[in-house]
Amino acid sequence: MLMAVQDLGHGTWRFIPAESTYESAPAPKESRRQWIPDGDGVKFIHDGTSAQGKPFHTEFRAAYDGKPVPFIGGTLYDSVALFSKGPNRVEQVFTLKGKVTVKAVRTISKDGKKMTIDSRGSRADGTKFKNILVYERI
Figure (cartoon, rainbow, N blue to C red):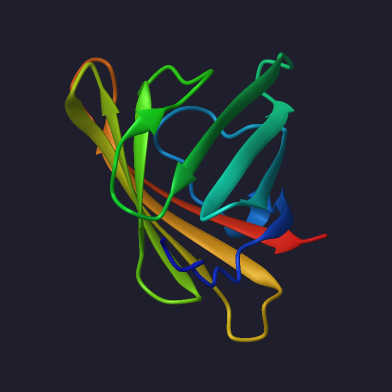
């Protein structure tokens, strides 16, 4: 039986565009991420409005064991694997058709009020990007 991983990122988070840099595409107008405890892992739900005003939704369920699971709703990837690096840090590896396209590190601030996601990868055309996304707990 696996032990539950402590993840201080559990909860609901709202995107702060003014504190973020977004190179992969135009930044969304709105973005809300939820990390919900789910057995020995987490259920992730991401809803928002794109820069073009279109709603979007992505989700997955994963343990923190590094095993890839389906990522639903993404365009740059179709699976994700999570690696716990302590209560304030989770590393994520996203793949598309078995090829790594994005690696991200999600860090929770010491006071637990902000989440920063350092995301680096490649667009569909192969060009590289770096996103630094900042969220606040709501």
